[in-house]
Image (cartoon, rainbow, N blue to C red):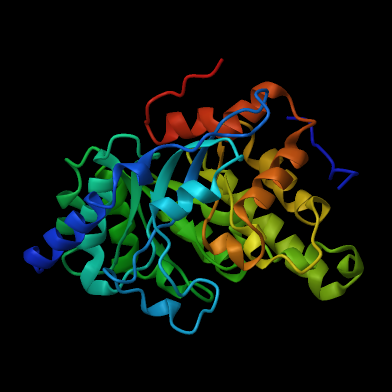
Length: 337
């Protein structure tokens, strides 16, 4: 498609059952979609990256010491956060619960998807691809009507991506008909390219625009050699990932690291590169809420995104915001006037 430049203007069943019951009794009022104050001309959104956690019921060790995220974020909080954004449906994204709670996480979100009025309609679960019993774990979820894929957050250079047991685990995901989300630092993208090549029958989703460092895009860094090198390497690896035709890119996550005083212009170059490189058929949107709160509110993120894509054809905007999600995640089509 024609390139668009940056915008010019601003194992314990009892415990499991107790936790699931706790969510189920949270009250129907928590699951009713909010009244949206958005412009009626806005295209609705399927949020393909929704996080939820209840620290009174789940263990997320990585949250310790995090002043912004170190509390519970449950459905009532999410419904409040999406007011005025146009988000009408959501795909739950795993939250890196402690190792012994992976099954439990899936059971909790499955129950949530079953609730009448819940915007959450599908889920991507956490996993340990190189675990000895990983095939059994994947097969456990094959008959679940809400599970669409799996993710594990990759760190550093992602050397684990090229390890035989890890590769075999990702191949198992593809053989079972699921997708795998790639969530890595920019330095890890090169090994992700190798992983993708080793798993031709597995469909991949690149989370958070490949986690490009937005600070490298700021105007004052454009002439900085280290920033230029970082951007060039990110572009190279994202282009290679886009070469696999069933790999898609999730426009999400980048506002979690924006600097104070950021504007849509700061994130537009990275977003536009992803949209142009993967094309209109292979991009979806995610809120990354509540992690996005590290840099911006959900309303601020969606407002900036709509501003960035405003000059693109309406058909491309619809694909990005909801049509592609409906297709890739096999969810019920939204009613749009």
